[in-house]
Image (cartoon, rainbow, N blue to C red; front, top):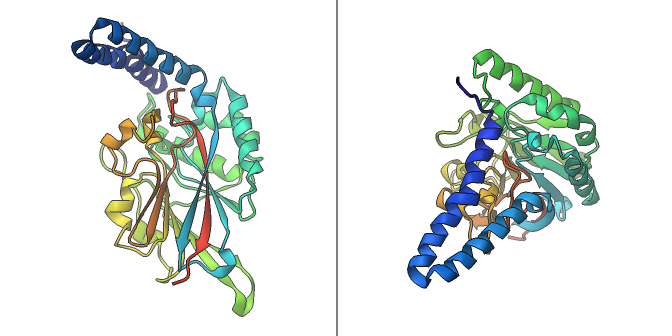
Length: 325
């Protein structure tokens, strides 16, 4: 008899086993060899308490993190402009905890952002995950609208049915539902955000690429195509799900002033400045600046596993500031 496990269940079994058995076991052996069995037992008990906290409370603890982006390319009229970033909701994880998404939307609207951007991974495996949350997500609002890009999970390639027809159907449904809730999906496209009229008209530009990643994640994005029609020396914001794209294809290769990414979740564990995500990504969480370009990596909201410790679910508010050259 062959037993099939859904992607979410499989991931929860793996991560749960590691957090509850594997990681404490490794720590016990290490501490036992150095300090003895007594301290080793106390260390394991402490770790288990942290894990239990992460599974019961940590994934519910929404925080708002703020940052500033300084650039001489920013028009004066946009000084103080507030960009609210969301990332990695993985909404199927909250099907049994829908009040969490209600709280999230209320917290977003309380920030009164000028624009909201979503940097990918709305679902886990299927577009159907969004259906129970349509009315709630539709209540999210910002002055200049809501824009999004696709993350690796949004291609719906992790489900049991991996046929091309099912994958394309899910992608089309997901894109349709994002449109219905008022999100503008930018698939290798750009839009103009304007202020003023006539000769006093100023603008910044929002660019969105499909997922650009390293294997095993899909690589569908086309930054060159997404930037078509944009002049050099203008202030540009790029939405790109995977932060590794910044160093490989944006930094020192374009004049994009601000790149917003997610994807890493900081491994959903962060203690001080440490996260296991740093073993896989040079830039895994927070603000990074180099060569006049800034990257901000959101730790995101959810995950296929309802667990977070230290890397609490976060809403990111980035305020744009004009830097006089």
